[in-house]
Amino acid sequence: MSAFLDESTMNSNSSSLQFKTSWFWRMLPAGMRRRWWLFRLFDIVSHHWPVTGKRKGLLVVRMDGIGDMVLFHQALSVYSNIFRVPNSEIIVLGCKSWGSIADQIYQGYSLRIIDEHAFSRQPFYRLKIGLMVRKLNVETAICDSYFRRAMMADSLVWISAANNTIVSLPFINEPTRPEFTFYLSQVDKVIDTGPYPTHEVLRHFKFLSNLANRDILPLPPSVPWQEQGQLVDRSFPYVVLNPGSNEHGRRWPFESYLNVANHLLRLGYRVVIVGGQGEHAGNHREMFGEDERVIDLTGKTSLPELMNILKFAAGSISNDTGPAHLSIALGTPTVVIVGGGHFGSFVPYPEQITPPHVRFVYEKMSCYHCFWRCHKRAKKSDVFPCVGAVSEKKVISMILEVLP
Image 1 (cartoon, helix red, strand yellow):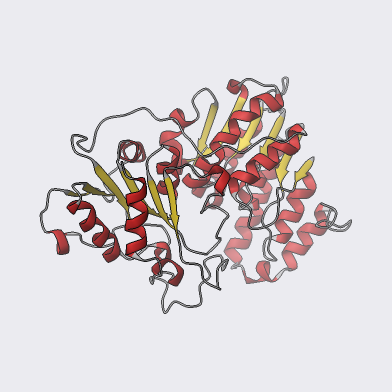
Image 2: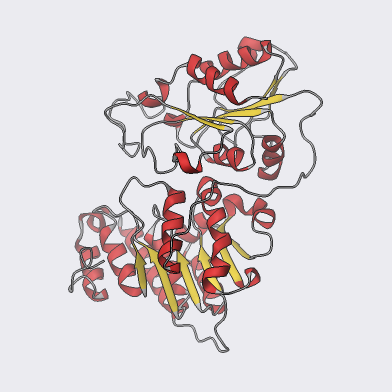
């Protein structure tokens, strides 16, 4: 901690000055600067809002995506023992992106789901959420995410005005250093969970081990799920293909997915293609026509429906994205196609927490750990070379290893 924050940067006024004079601040349009000050003002109002009554409970801030939520889930089960509070007094502050499955995943805990995008963009929504968080009047507030945004996760911890505030040391680069400098100076404890790249699951349990002052062994990702309706007929076994991703570069070529699908069809499996809105990677009918054994549900499923499809699949093949982690955590035989953007931080899993039904496929390149700032693509819609280098033969071999 001392190596990161010197005496001058521990002062909040100094931190604000650093931020305002940084190149990042100078590059912001005037409208964004005004919004930043309005956000700061509303955060201060929320933080100092008067609340009476005894402080109670534990606030766990999880402003992250579906995959991150899955990787964190097992660690949450240890919080009750460490802080000596019942699960009902542990408040999970989560994201709308996975809010529709939160009731099952976090059954027994208290939940507060917010629209993370609105919180980061709309000042008055931010004020509304800030006051809600402050009125929880919690004893302790925690955030152990490594890759996070200071004005999202750290601001919510600060707004809570909890008696005890504990965070992990985040990933910091020069543009984010001023903001993190301020927020880290405001908390009671900062826990260093290891250098980059350390896998997220290992980080969560290092965080817990530090709090408990003893080693707590990491657990493989797992989430509970009970069936909610049946979208795909389970009379015949099927394999799920997830060829989409928010980032175009992480999308293994759709043609390769279709070639793998063709192999699976010859083996007697049906194929179910899934993906979110806007993740249509191509038209499977160019290869399969109206073959009823190929079911395209891209953009047609809710998140709970996707959970059902994954849970009862014979297997799944996915790019490095949220559904890959869901599939693994549900116990489905899973193959994940991995690139090198931040290799090892999320995928592949370390050996000690990789379930036997999981395979990670990748082709190592010298440019790994580019944080997806790839300079080898002609345009942003192109697949990352490290992803495109993964062979169909290798993917087929891996899925055959884990299929029933």
